[in-house]
Length: 503
Image 1 (cartoon, rainbow, N blue to C red):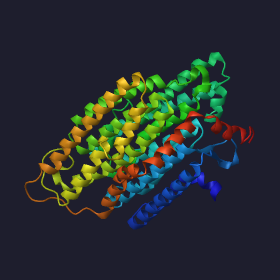
Image 2 (cartoon, helix red, strand yellow; image 1 turned 90 degrees about the horizontal axis):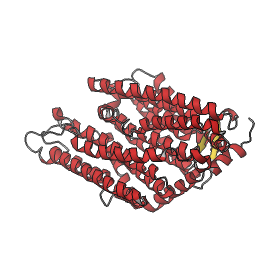
Image 3 (cartoon, rainbow, N blue to C red; image 1 turned 180 degrees about the vertical axis):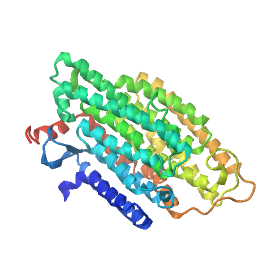
Image 4 (spheres, helix red, strand yellow; image 1 turned 60 degrees about the vertical axis):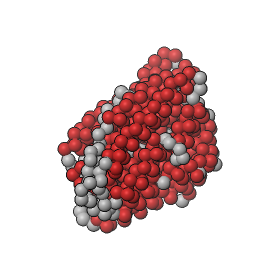
């Protein structure tokens, strides 16, 4: 069983999705039990994988026993194990919240939810570019349907932009993969990295074009400026548990940039090394600046949280743009924090909207809420965490990133990151004042919220204090992960030399 552990994050949600979609009508309790059980089992598997990867050993699973570089390989290292665990933790909160009633607003929610998990996990584990494209398509197809869950004009409008842009991105992805395959003769990322060292000079132009096209695709997934305009409305319109799960979607793009450019276009690629660095650095800073302004213009709580996701995207990509092990370690710590906290805030925004009646999540005065005190307390904790104030984990993540900046990078990153944090704090303070302090007159509105909602939000927001308590072990793991990414040779050796060159 141990040797098959690596493939379980893909197989488990696949099987669960089939079981859930097979029973399409009724049986709400059956669907909930299967979906929650599968997600909890996925969490246990992800913990086992992280434990296995924490030793520094790199392993792979050859599907059909066809060895790399010819067959499909799922690769487990520190980075992929970390991303699987973060996805699993986020998914537990989202699926439990959905069981509070959101899953009944449309059909096939739980089956599509599991298949999106399959696509996300597959993207984190795959060892070749074509299957990265395949898993991107799986998660996108599931996300198209989940975005429309429950219907509504706003969701349909947002989904049109989301679908069109991502279809264009998928086409560009396929073209880029074809160019790189034609130039190198392989799709396996480790094999491609090895071949770039002996690439004829006349093919360097093709590889450069393919690499920059991939950067556009991954930038679209990560929502980097100027490719982020689809995200705020899509995330703000999505059902709360879907929006929470979407918090990991931008991280898939960030992961892809980290993985592809640290492995294929590493220092051994010669003149092709670090192709992405200047582009990512400046566009990340621009994303951070624009998102910092946009967050103050939001007039809806869901839209505000969506812009906070963009602030985190700019922050994370700035870490990639610095391209040092210290910066990568810092961005991985911050990635865990921001994914779970923004996911929790999407769920909290839905809870607040349910108790405000017609006012919903609009930042206008409303009537007092039945459970307003508890909601205010959780909003206060989430706001401190996401704005990056002490003593929660956001402050540590930002401090690590600021400390990683060197030379002229400090002149750009320090003011932009601190100003973005200040604008986030101002926007959240204004929102909190409007929602809880200024809304104190009239009859109490709203019904008592189900316990599934409370559990889900507490589950995700508790990451902020826990990451402070366990800052040492988490930071040690992210530093080891950054060091592993800095030296891709062990991964290449494991996939090619240990596997052999023939199937």
